[in-house]
Image 1 (tube, rainbow, N blue to C red):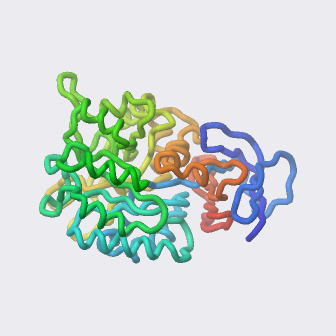
Image 2 (tube, rainbow, N blue to C red):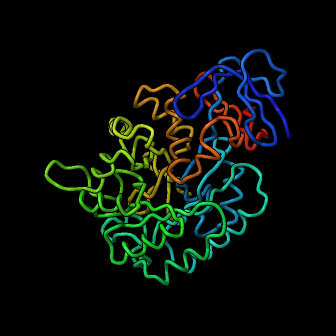
Image 3 (cartoon, one colour):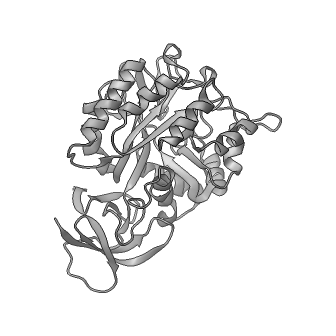
Length: 371
């Protein structure tokens, strides 16, 4: 559909502001947000709120499909499933596994992402590993962890042919500084994670271009009044982004509120959603291994937004910033997605009075409607 008008609703811009109106779409872009009576292509129920489409920068797969093992099945299934939770874009995450398998999965995802897909849009690649600290590897298998040599960095970059590339790396491991220089030079978004780094190393990492802290509080030294942690560096730096798994288990509600109080519009809500397989099962609201180690979340992005509202007392237009404008800015796509203003992609989500997703539009096309 080349033109459409959707509303009326409270339109949450994505930057925390909101206004009443209707969204007019032309050729897949937001043409305007208009007041007053309109001829409506899609008339929304009373009490609806329109927000930018949700963006998940850290998702390992869906159902029983892992991006590093079943890249095509995971990609196509998530494109279809994600809009049911208000998601219009996501960054496939490739967890640590045999190096050749990681490279193969990344190549397949890049190639498939260049072809037409229906539903939510993949935004590129996220390598969570294998350049991690062994002490804080968690479920990343130790035998597959590697140092970021120049040859491995080049092999990683060769797989990336479309969208954005994000690499989560422990900034203190051997070769990390040199690798970071090359990755940043080539346009990669650097994240610090699965790290034993101190406050001082964290500050140096931020200066070195590690702009995001991967799943804050998890897989890193905790806050302690006599010990040092990279977490403190990212909490105090006003330019750095903190990613958080807002399920209330990985980070308690009170610490989620603390993160928002300190980071505000630089808090990035994500899921780190983990497929459930024979080796990973659901327990206590999270995904765990047979040994009982937390492997990831069972969270959906829309529930993450509701959890932020519950923890902080924010209204939906304010809380949704963490799942829209913040992730878009974190990977440098805020000129295309993450807010609702003229010229932006018409990717948006409709919520009811109870903050439940009722409709999802991608490029101005209705992809999901509840019931």
